[in-house]
Image 1 (cartoon, rainbow, N blue to C red):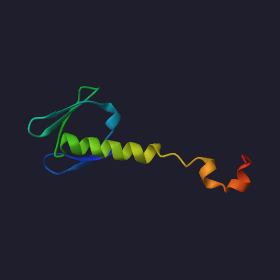
Image 2: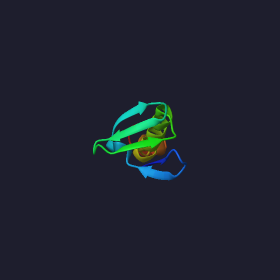
Image 3: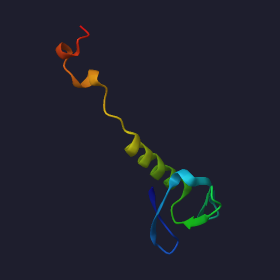
Length: 77
């Protein structure tokens, strides 16, 4: 979920995975796959950055074991 702002400034959370289209008109119009529409203060570029940041946050994987263990403990010598 990403945090967005309605035109009057109210904050709300949106499941970004339901976004079908983004339109600039001059405000940003979000259309969901459910056909529900939202006008928000954030630009399409800001929305994309929020989505990318959220996805990076939830999809970050721990580093591979090879980078954690010292060479002598890896068993690949």
